[in-house]
Image 1 (cartoon, rainbow over the protein chains, first blue to last red):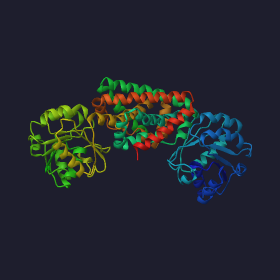
Image 2 (image 1 turned 180 degrees about the vertical axis):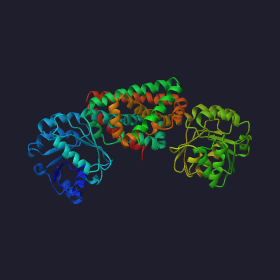
Image 3 (image 1 turned 135 degrees about the vertical axis):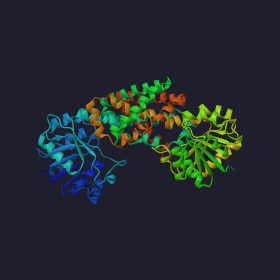
Image 4 (image 1 turned 90 degrees about the vertical axis):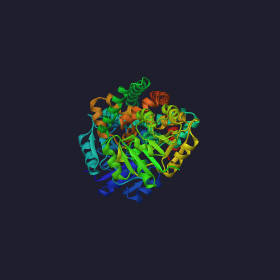
Length: 280
Length: 280
């Protein structure tokens, strides 16, 4: 099995992977475009060695491509010119469909992955040990995926004590549109709606807002770059979810307008019940 | 000032008020329709005396009507036949417009109130000391409100260490529609939308859902009775907010469909900024 692990991109995810893999006894080679980030990663024990030259990754048996979603595709073309044939590459992007086919076509040892863990913070200074423990880590093989490469990534994910899920890229993208990407826009829309209220009402509402409003708006008030990438890269699945959502909101609005208490009670009881299937 | 406080309805709010007022040295007379609830309130020290007979409230200088929103109006007509003239009555319903005028017309010493505190639990067993401390408590006087009655309620709210706000009933109802009632339906709609996905996607989404989905759906998966009362009693303000919300969601959906990254980035940055005005 792999002994040397490469990490391209030493942010929250890359840095956290490094902390765990160093602890597990692997040699970890980190690459960041900023030398300062490399220095912090070394100090924190998130890498064995680190530098700004991608050629360092040539030593790796497995490379985690932890660049942001909008950099994954472009970086693959450069990365594969530097690696030894047979080196496994896996990414951590939260949308899988746009890259899987092309990445596998240019590098037969590519395995799509999505660790579903994070914090509200970013960067190497936010990296945490055990970030992936008991969190879902999804792999999205396609028919062209090399089975041995897949097995090597699975082995590492198990070592991270993450919950391993394996599914096709399209199902992954639809599921995350439902539970992660649509909620960002549903929540952001609530924040944007506050601007429609008269200034006096906005001011009063700001004073009275409590934990319910804070929770409902948390993901919509998060990092704009993440939301933008969800919208641009998972567009089809997101549009489908938002279309279904608009239909439901309109139905609720009609029931409220008609004062149809029975229909509303049924729907609110359904909501309460449904949540138990998603939140344990 | 008032020495004897009556509490009609010994649930989470009534029971918590009782715990604090007993501690502050008031004589607290509690009334519940269930004798078992009265017994628990006595045991927990949430009342000085309690019983099922409303006539007990005759001893009170101030009565907190803590019945659920759909019982407030009907209960006022019965309550005023039992009280001494001059007894202050205040309610705790989360919508003020429907009751204020009529309640003040039948009882000139009525003061509308809304303590904005709660937990996920209900009933006398969920009552907590200091529930109102540093939480907003809104009073909604109208021109016909008796100034001395208002001052007496303000005095008690200050003793509870709550944050006192005073506004007109219409502004209150619009503000809570924005930050509390609309979020319930926006959040419930997200839960209901999950049903539109194919069963396999629903199953995968249930396994992958994490804190973001949990937070966004918390208020929508809450007590259906509360949501129903919001829809029925704060209908006009809620419909206005949901109408504005539908407009915003449609604008976001169009920007996503057109792949307009610049417009989306602007809106997501606005959301992030707006949240800071509401959540500190």
